Image (cartoon, rainbow, N blue to C red; front, side):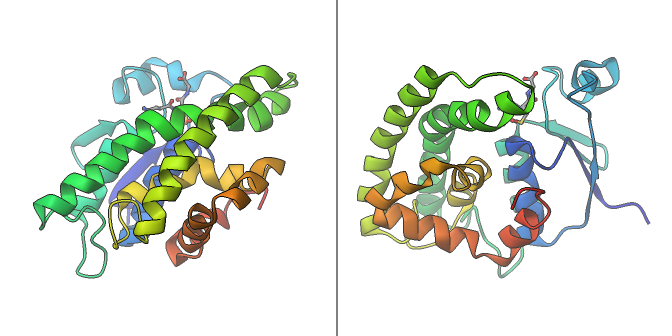
Length: 217
Ligand code: GS8
């Protein structure tokens, strides 16, 4: 039988990983349909029908076609929520609002700082280029400022939105997993609460199931 939902894009692409993590958390069967960046398939007319910006991921749930990984993640966690896995906290408006705050922080503060580091250290060398050291250094400085805020928050609460795990936490993992495999992982030694939080998230069975499919780890 066909899997009920389809994710378009390679699992290893961070924005695709975000969606897969959510599907693993709620235990929904899914099919990954690979879209080949190398041949420019993400800009093909067929893929533009799924995501008019020609990006990955795209997501199909029956008749519903979605793009934007955080919106897809919210849909998955809302529709397939179980009594054990409640990662949006929508039954409590204050908790849900705090999840939104930290999810926006991830998208607008954390992601712009960490993403260039990962692209420069991993993707650029893979395609034969030389990493831009200046961009890496600037991004690292930006990231440390963000981590100062995280350290303060995570020394008060176990997770970002409070003492409950949520999508806001999980959403950080796609880039952080790669970051932890770079020499810069030691940066986290200066942020003990952040480091403990990352290790706690990495130990989640759903997260382990996803990471174990990565070729490098
Ligand atoms: C970003 C998607 C994106 O940049 C989301 O889904 O969250 N805000 C969107 N996807 C990348 C691959 S994953 O890192 C992508 O498609 N890049 C190719 C391109 O932009 O042409």
